[in-house]
Length: 119
Image (cartoon, rainbow, N blue to C red; front, side, top):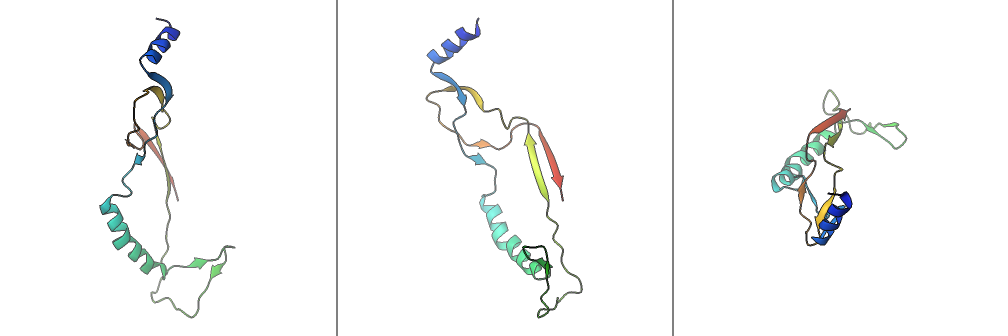
């Protein structure tokens, strides 16, 4: 069967070679238990520790506030973590789509993954 014949048949069956209908990503960041933990545990604890941390201005100069001595013998240091995830099927979104097909929520990042992290 020639490719052009198969393409004509797919079009006659109401399929089009196009990108997936756009649905939303479902990754769990807004689940009720995650939101509750972030709002009621993580953010209050972070705010409490933040007063023990050093601060810098927009020019990278340390802001020293001598009016508030550090109530602890040592300062708190926050280590931020940068991470990227790469998935095998993240960019494979073009396929034969039936004209009547509706967008569906889909899991973010299908397939094998590779995590790249740095501090």
